[in-house]
Image 1: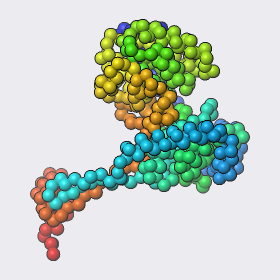
Image 2 (image 1 turned 90 degrees about the vertical axis):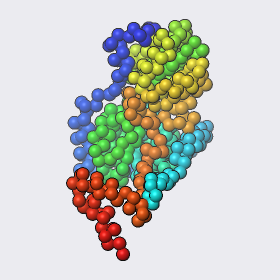
Image 3 (image 1 turned 135 degrees about the horizontal axis):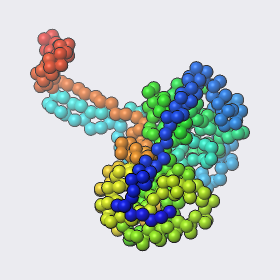
Image 4 (image 1 turned 90 degrees about the horizontal axis):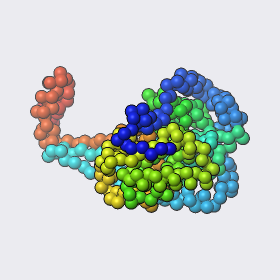
Length: 431
């Protein structure tokens, strides 16, 4: 990597960094659609066929049994179970605070008229948990715990099996700790189709959440006309804002932490100090020698990495709001003042001691976040993603009388006489 100046970035470099790896899924849409249609028409038979074809696994039962779940606890290290429970506690604490009450305050909009909102959870939600190269028990917690707090009755998880037809035991233990009610051995587009439309074994759901590869992303897009989805999800990304007070050792470590997710992760450092930029680059090279994941990190740094020096903090803030990062770390003397100027971001990490991995695992904040600039319009996954507020309103006779004339005027203006009559008739035939 070379150190660049933010104000002097050429258009091609700036466009590459801003767009990063927003996956173009158009080319796989036809293929994914054919898989979805096959599952809709042939259900479990199609799923078992694709599980054998894509996962190289021959299985007889799609649903994970209680015996498999029990066995998972026997093989998972006790320290991992303890860590999962601590993470669960922190996630629950944060998420419960988001939904302080399931009934919002009643508002009197006029004498005799009361309006309020009440919470209703989504009854059945589906959670996709990636498999393949790695296991992500933390993602299980991040999806399931907010759904459970929201009041969802059934939490249905799908995740691809290994070649032996098994699910990683850590994933199973995490699912049990988080309150998942149903676990199925299926991945890819066929899993999304099963969740959206149901099969003999797998029930359909009303919302699907969780990240996946581009086939999963494409499938979620295809089924979104019939079932809700959380957000478009792409490769991980981190952007770090630093001034001369920041620690380059910590900066480098956090850039590497994000880069090891995959070769298309995005790692960006924006600093007002050229010295910090230089020291960070030296630290990156030093710390890379200790990582077993160095190949992935190097690939991500080459593809979508950037170390840039800015003239001032305002220049950095303008770039960050355009970039709209998934993770934003602020390592400056007065980081709270910087936060106030950030409008487009998934999750913010403040100060030297809020490591990239702290939010990924255990602070309680959710790590399922908008990527690829989608933070401009999407929020982190949270408890309110698993339900909705419905409206309730009540008028007394005097309350309706107070708005009677306005109802009539607006009904006439819109050419809807029955609307006017639905109010007027109450006063004409008032027994």
